[in-house]
Image (cartoon, rainbow, N blue to C red; front, top):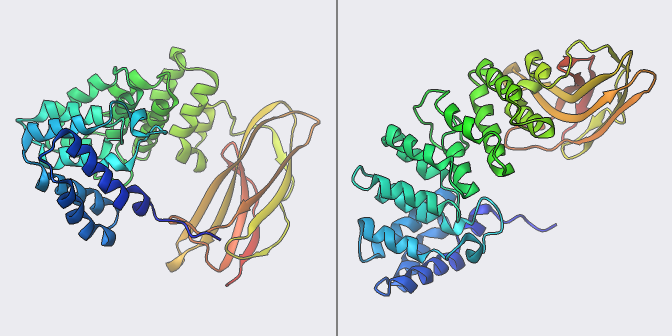
Length: 375
């Protein structure tokens, strides 16, 4: 089995640092690319990803012959003419260009250069998403930055529109928290929720999901208003609502299911769960089956719930999607899955006693038990 290469090794490595040096030298012959690469690479191998980004932007700052707006002009001119020309083949961009926006945040986050710096981040986000640097501007210059963010919602580049939603997320992963009200981003989302690009709509849903962690009623009211507006319908609205309310759906919150037209009290019955095996190990698949019947047509949204007791006696749950369908009278709906039991950063599969239940439209049915054995 081939070992997985850590992201930090592919994101910023010797080859990419050398490329940054070449691209900057091409527009600024006074930039000593050799010394830049040598100084950065002296430290890079021992650093994690975030520190690699910071060390590279520091190297740029140390070796550029100018500072301030003149340095920013060099960095912008060093970018290939388009993200595609740079080799960007996805929506998020290349980590190769993460030090550029980090440089803006680290060395040009001042009132004097604010407008130019924010405009640069909007330009750079096509090469590598700039939401993290924007967070630092939101912390230091919240009103001015939010004004710029609002203009980004109408930008012709979908990546800039997505930046408006993503940078203002209340709980953006791996990012510092910003001291803004939970509903501060709603005016931005009002513009973007029916955006033609799925990358933008996904960010809107993730932003709402963050908000739902502290104010689910606000999110529910917002989604109900959007549903009534008719600007998003059918599968597009269902995708938006499911992702915005995903944690509420996992928790079985009836209003979330009702918004998606799933009745919490649907006239359904479920046969007892049947497990293929009741003794498993970390890495095995938990294979189960059950049959659902209904006395009248009923849309159903089915999830599995794995429960156990963690260290200190605290209950732990893992909830995952199984199936969406419409149950019809007289026709058995088979529910079966082989769910992989793998430890992750958020869920540790430890030896002990577990239970498995199915949750249909937020209603949990009787559980069965199984055991995780030691290695």
